[in-house]
Length: 214
Image (cartoon, rainbow, N blue to C red; front, top):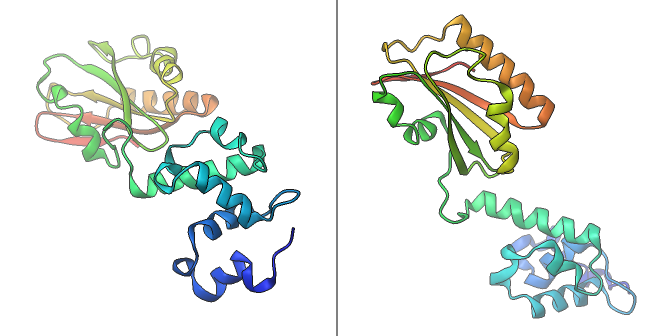
């Protein structure tokens, strides 16, 4: 069912801006089309009757495809819009900390500042850059045999991480990366590319400072 031009949400958006549209009209722009017997505004109204606005950001795929007129494509479009909104607002998931900078990462790695031995630790992040897991991979002299890609990325796969931040300390106090540090960074970045898991940083941490090798 087609709508008269003056009732079409996209035309209203262009003329009035998003603040001039009702909830069902905003939702209708995402859905684009209705279904047999109902126009897109009516389908949008059905969704909002079933799921109050306050619950929209918590909906899952299975919830949406149960609504008549919502197929897989429309459900995915809505979920993508909801997820982008949550990321823009930094809606927290179980109060998980956000890691948006090297400084944020170092705040989660304070134990490395005073460790007497060299520790290699990995922070595992979800797609919102929230810390979902932290694991010590090795303790002792840093080398390729102690830090193997499978040991780094196995937890990433288990915890469905989107990216990782590598970190190790220099008990001697210097932040400058060694050739071995740089080679390890390169090796793990390449392994991450194959797995589709980004190595977003590799930090060297000392008692009073830190430095990125990337």
